[in-house]
Image 1 (cartoon, rainbow, N blue to C red):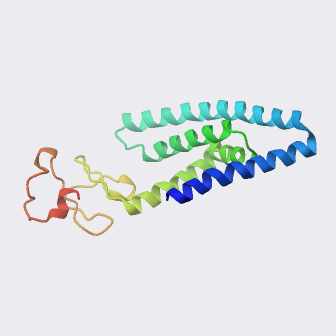
Image 2: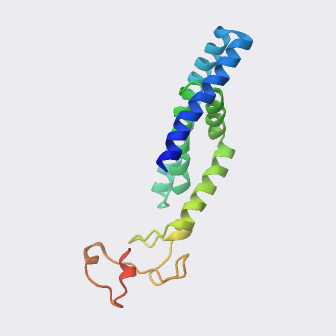
Image 3: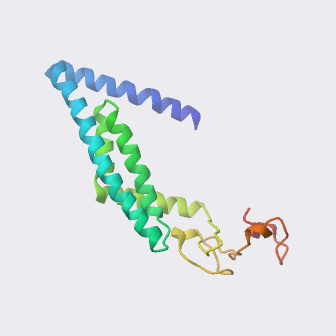
Length: 170
């Protein structure tokens, strides 16, 4: 993971620099710098607007007693979009603007939530479990087919009634 991250953090800025240098050679430095500044300012304003909308959706979900999973993922995507939009570059600006388009962002966020839900089993005293955090009840099968056992927080160190250590939330 670390080698990939280092590669991404070195290759992307070099590619962005090459693109900006070629653009500056083609149209001059003034318009190139203006493009970088305008996309940064516009991107920050759009990210702020979309962030406020998403925060409102998160609050609505919480007030309605729903887990705001999709809205939280969208909020992280908006934060990422804001970060890449204020950094100079053409490719990162394109990626940032794509993440600020609500329909595309929802589609990407849905796929991210789906991928995470397939890999994670969430056990919550309120009965939330895997598969998009759908409400369930104790004893219902989870996505893996194993029964969902609700263990109170103060009883986590004690052995469960059936003696199965996996039901402790491991």
